[in-house]
Length: 467
Image 1: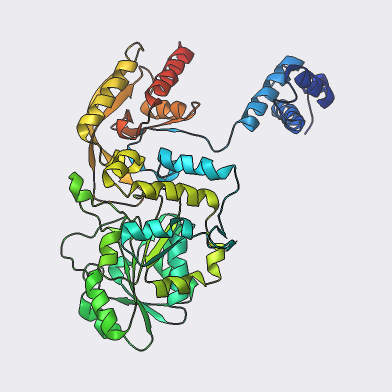
Image 2: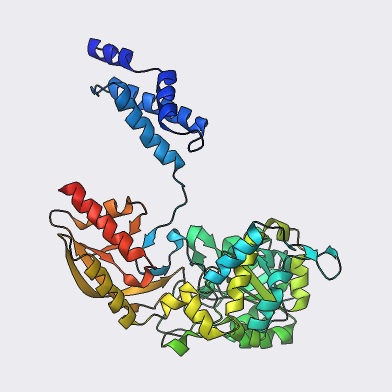
């Protein structure tokens, strides 16, 4: 492409990398920004300027202009990629926003072992190598009533590991109505195939009976698998076989029973005026040989997959070579221990574990926070209104549950809701809301201490930028 004379002149005017680096070094202390970042930013700024010239633009080309571009790139490179956000969506266990928030007790445990050596795999009583699972096994068994327990990196890993151990080369009987898919296209049939097990579907989508399992059982049957539909619900003309019924049949036919609870919970939500969700304790009490569930959803802890059940089956699972590939690190164990200790007193757990606190929050509490938010925004030229809307538990749990909430609708004159959502999302820290009926909505249920001030600051900056 033939360059015009003005383009050639602009290109010749560009400062060299060394000149730009010298200017940056003079402005920015070496201990604040590594030289590698300065160099990369200088080169990227110059390249961006060249591209704009080649594209026919006529930018201002001087040292100050290129320095401005370089500083923008330095700021981007030095800002953490993983950053906090303000969750105003009302989705409590928001998969895209990090799922469950950790309790202070969990964070304290992380700090206690994160910057010091620990007895991760060292038995202090014997002075010999120990198992990392012992840090939480007793706690899990105490809370769930299970005989034995272990933890891996997430529930998908837990399901894969259990199936690989229990049914490789054998059949696993599952109801058609329980062949779930969760986020990331994780499907029970695919996991079954990867584990080496043979999927045997019984029943229909909406109705499965005990006789379906009975008729499908053969000498090749290695497992009865029950999967809780934690992320969807089938309503109407339905029928499902309970864990207790499967356990009775399993004992009669010599077939173990595995119950994948998905989200999993230690708390009976019906005690808090919410729909009941199968608890881990109920599944264990019903006699399931293996129960799997997540640690970072309704449990309110770090990402992990928890496996509880009979000592015989847990021991076999521990010996599977996949266990090492799926094991969790010391920080996850520390956070999980801190979370589990709170469950010794359910009232404390509901009060101190953020996920439980937000899910059980009464509408009156959201009204008070909505009022505080609107009060904080009073001095700005914007319109706010209290709206009776619903929050969601999220995280593939309690799919039919809507939590009554008092939300705040925010309108800026001359700015559409989509534009406001975008600019709030680009704030530092980002504020994530939702749009309903062409109105930008913030739900107080998922706001944390200090978030209202951050929201007010973000909106004040937007107003100032538009004035």
